[in-house]
Image (cartoon, rainbow, N blue to C red; front, top):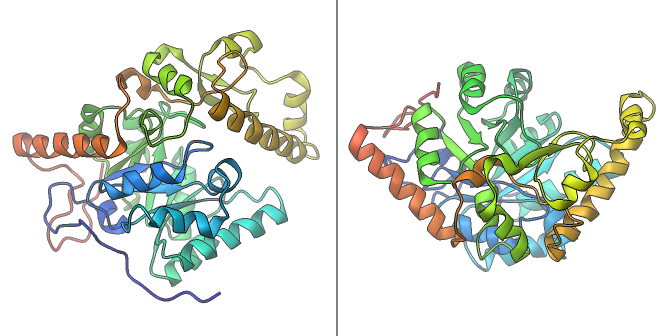
Length: 363
């Protein structure tokens, strides 16, 4: 593999901008917003729309290839037809099998070859990704739910942390946003708030708390660029916070979903055999593989079919502040306008990166 050394593209980044943070510097973007990698919802048009608006859209490789049908390299090039601004890549680094790891290594290498320099890692030890990406002049941010994982990420050399709290969709963490920031904010790395951000007011509150950026998922499903079924999108608009429940039946560990008729019928607890296999040293990897393969199919079906009597629809508690379907670019613009208005009224955010400053620590 040949990778040309390069610096981050910094289209839209302005020194001294009120929205400048260590994150915007690292990602090379103007607005501290990530469109989080979502299986199965991260289609190319959504990723591109968020990046074109000044945030950064993250490519989810299995969504790109299995759900939306692109050859991986050609899918990245397709995104580039819509925007030349920075996009990111999500490397799921849990080593469930040698074949899976080899495929992820190949995808990381192709992403670097195609010019991606912002990476998000999750579900494992990020050292090998950090080593590859740093060699090419890029940065890695790591998903964490508590301090021990944040410390492991810091030891591996990640540039930032994505703090997944208990309001997130998908695999949510156990702590609220404030407690999680207090727990990991002293590690000297910029921290991104992931979970519960559905409105401009939520965005401003996260920046006021000391976060360097936010990661949105559910809010970006309810956009015309996302290919989710209209009934899935409408369920997000109709849902309240109490409609979001945790189910073990999708992946074997708790996942945040909308409580549809299907969820109410089948319950949220994994079956006794699955629980027993997940506890067994010799059987847990097999059971995780079974769950992973089945959930890939179930979530893909739910994206396309939109049947609340048979499908899972992932979402977080940010549904409480999502009331309409808006273009992704309009969402980014509204959030940015609200943040700038807050700065004009109340002064800079704690994690603001001033001209010539290397890092302003959150927390």
